[in-house]
Image (cartoon, rainbow, N blue to C red; front, side, top):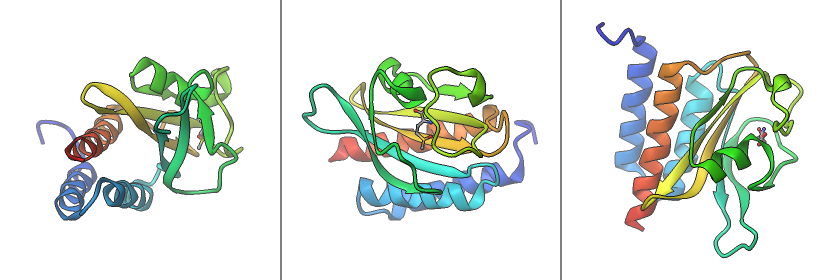
Length: 161
Ligand code: SME
């Protein structure tokens, strides 16, 4: 395979496309994506969306659909955590070792690494897809590409309204 991607990534990409074609709403797509990624990706131990609460001032990220252990962080300000950093910068944040990142807000003692990918609607951040792993440095370039693809599909669905 020229991309060097494993069969697993291709399989999950296809499944994401199928879910996107079948989901009736953006909300359903978000729920389906959290379930799929948590079930199929061995190292994606917690998968969830945080969405900017409409009209909140100051802005706040509210926990939406998620799969994995219950988290104490159901509302996160933009100046808090890896989640706040990704939403306020509009950039994907990958943390290979959460113990080395002072921004990190702990959800579970088992979490070793994390990726947070912003979701955009018409160029503006509206939320993000957050994934925690029990494995250090769990998110390589293929993982990042997959998570960014999921976040992009959700943004497109939200944009359609
Ligand atoms: N670790 C995140 C908080 C959310 S939990 O991972 C579910 C952060 O540092 O923002």
